[in-house]
Amino acid sequence: MKIIDFPKVQIGFGTGKTTWQVFTFCLILGLNISFSLPVLSQNLPNSDFEQLCDSSSSGFCHWKVSWGKDSTCRPAISTFNHCLSINGAKKTSVGFAENQISLDTSSGLRVVKLSGKIKSQEVQGKGAGLNLAFYDQEGNFLSNKNMGYGSFAYVKNTNDWKNYEIASVCPDKTASLKIGAILYGKGTAYFDDFSLSVMKADNQTTDSSAIRYIHSACDIIKKNSIVRDSIDFNLLQKQALKICGNPATDQEKHLSVEYMITALRKAGDPHSFLIYPDEWKLWKNDSSENANIDFPKYKLVSHCGYILIPHFDGGNEKLIRAFIDSIHHALNYLQDQNIVGWIIDLRENTGGNMKPMIAGLGPLFTGEKLGSLYNVEGKKQSWHFSNDRFFWDDDDENLIVAPLHLRKQIPIAVLTGNKTGSSGEIVAISFIGNKNTRSFGQPTWGLTTGNGSFTLEDGAVLQLASTFMADRNGKIYKGPIPPDELVEAKAGADFELLSAVKWLENKK
Image (cartoon, rainbow, N blue to C red):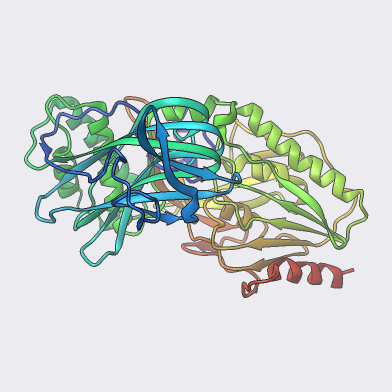
């Protein structure tokens, strides 16, 4: 650490040192999950998909379609046995079938493991995977676990049958559990032979490696978390240690940290998460289709240059450069069309790595300083773009981009919505105070915290909400960012876009 006594700022993965981060991700446990915890008996009805039921929306007894049309989730035959098939027509399609069971609320601390076989045929998009969702006695949603955003663990392309597993600690007061098979995207995914285990985690004794691991993670949280003053850390460590057996497995250690993150969520932190060692390596280095990068889209709307900036989940430098170049290509093309203004659409931007987003849009920003992150001690670091360079205060690492100089300054309209989150919000903040710029739409998601990147001893990375975002004028945001002009969403037309076009054309 080089500045004051809190982590050095570098938004985006892959720096190899403790950093502040702003992005969205979900915990992925991967394959072959092993536990030393005692297993409680648990029956999942029709786990092999052999009981057909005409009255069920999926065609299977105990399984119902919870997302998508009934026709997307139907019985199929595989090697003389029935299996569930889910079909997607587009990369943005979603098909989701679920089975539900009840759990005993008096059983104490528990870990749930779900396994199932998945086969894929020409799957494009995020991919196919498993899902766990937890509910209380009143049916209120508590939490869920799936194969992970960022999509490295989802099943894509064409693959033969393979077993996949996910696991989660049951939240307190869990009374029912929904087990899901899901396809995000285009193609066909097949599911079969599900298995569910519920493991008791109370009164476990563990080994010194787990004690050291959990104490280290807890110390990081105690020092840096934005909700540290609301946590009983002695109780938190005591409960987390119960999840690890003797000897403790790596998966149990990871689940213990996840359990602590669940406590942070209850205290008001919706943004922290854990990335496992293999996932961290993939996030930094993967340049294949598994990186699931969507590139910006652009077009003329009336006499305005419209660019949709999607989320960016990845740390591969070649993909970062390609994403920046695609924004620059859009800017260069559209400025040749004699446009009267820019429309930057962030409504679908759920976050990821902010660096390529800011660097790509750099030519649109006026002034050098674009915003800041404030830590729990009230100390700050700011991000900047100037002279074709994205950088942080007093930072010897920066991103230099290919020169692109816009021929004239024209008005900028920014579109935001309730999906604009995390790094998407930091892009929105970068436009606050920008010359001749106005935002339209709905308030953002409200994930306006920066995540510090803390590497644990096995290479797992704790992404901890440890800072708050602020605009270039010093205003700190601790929730959704309101647009300058609130536009009511209505069916039948894109009124946010129309409002932006009207404002830009009136500025001529």
